[in-house]
Image (tube, rainbow over all chains, first blue to last red; front, side, top):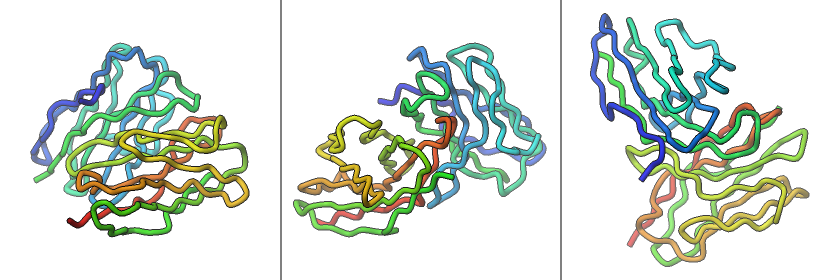
Length: 114
Length: 113
């Protein structure tokens, strides 16, 4: 069982909808990450939060809006997405930012844009 | 900049035979290296990590990898493949300052009965 929990597991939405992805970890990790993964490709980093503050934004379009309400929770707010945004969205966490500690991944949310 | 090359996009083995998944890295400093496995419709699971301690690293499910600085390699091996090993495997290196992970393109392991 994964220690990083993502909900929902699947999401289908239209291009005009607003939805949110949720990620939770209770390992006391202080770094949290969002990745996008297309089929048969490695994950691509989107955002990094360090001590609940956004530290890295990999030039992600503004239709993706991350939020870190507390040290255990990470959200990704979605609005006006495009069909090419259909992908597996993975959340990860690591013990401390900027260290060689491994990242622990959730099972992802599979997002389909109609 | 750091980079990782996984030399095979697909590897096919028979159940009970050895597994070798090849990875070469490029790094301007002493890197940290990881192998992750991803089963269908799942997230990435850490198999093992090298962080400048022992060069032979043992991981979960019988996997191990050897860090060879002279060859800039970090190949993943397992003595005997199991059907449940069929998955996508990613070799990963940390970026400068450990802020990001740099992923290889992945190797799909196929295991036949």
